Image (cartoon, rainbow, N blue to C red; front, side, top):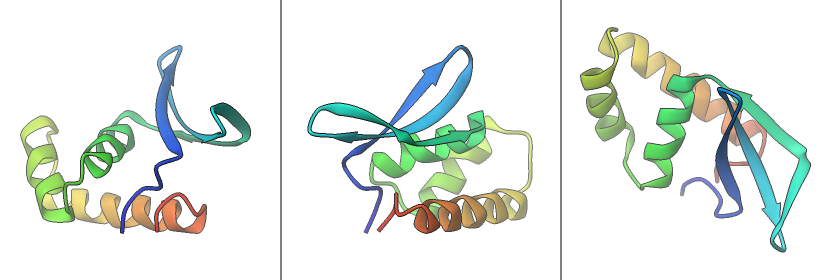
Length: 87
């Protein structure tokens, strides 16, 4: 399970978006705007890290609690699943 291969993260003018690619073309009807911490989670998910590894890595970068990151991760993952980006 993980993020589908045809989704990429792109930064545009300081904003992060997840975009679907079909047959080499960007599919702008499936654009999902996210914040910078969600972008970091997305990158780590694409790298194949599991939830615990992602939380540990993000605790090194962000001034927050483990519980807050776990909640953010769970919410983000639910959004990705709802949008059929994560399977």
